[in-house]
Image (cartoon, rainbow, N blue to C red):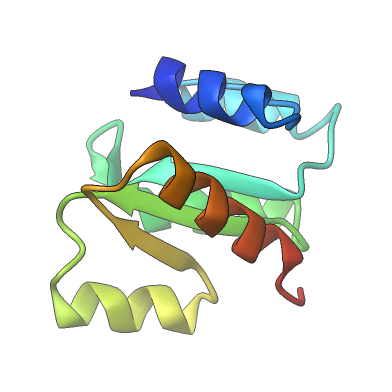
Length: 109
């Protein structure tokens, strides 16, 4: 899925620095200041919002988009709202994904 998202984003002109590892992401945040973190609902046996919350301590102005299939739980949606994370459930097309990314990138910090 990461490779497909990367291809779609780069095809629309975005620079993508993809990693599947939280430690690598932390190291990269020492070198870059991303506008947006896209993460799954669960990463490395932890909820994606925990990983995003931790990464945001390294880059406070970074926007977060959590994508996945298990986003219909009201508790999860409330938690994401409290952290000011955007959520985007599956299924979606490439154009819907790009539209959501642009919406999140354009949103106020």
